Image (cartoon, rainbow, N blue to C red; front, side, top):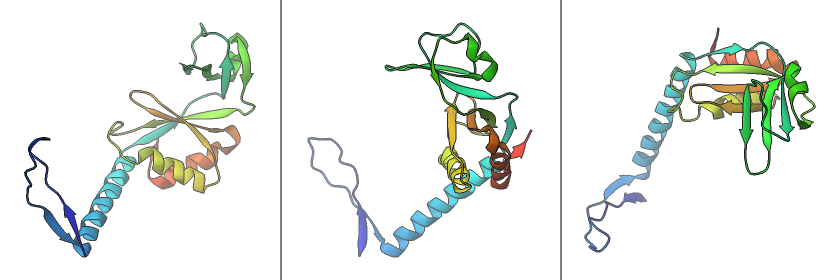
Length: 168
């Protein structure tokens, strides 16, 4: 059995063929495995070059009626609602519809290569899920943030350290 990778046509109106590259199944699997191994190693290198810090305070997720005036960690608006993530002491300043019942702690991920790190958040999410925790993720231009239930902070911290992050 062989896999064929057809070449590109010169134009959509010209049915000219270009020679194909023929690979055996074994060669194809070797290339695929090498690619996955390389990606996995690059991801590990990026994680080991990255750090995290635990932000002060307790955070809550809230659904509000109007755009808030105060400073909050995050405010987003989509077609259905306005969501605010803020420290718990700021909840009284909101035009609150409802809030999530849980308190969260915020972990800032200081990523070595934030935009071009395939699988970065998936690796973190999987490791934390494997430890029996749920997380909420917020990404900004230069950082990713993980929110964990307040009572699971130490477990999340230990999981990130085991992955290879350093704590700052």
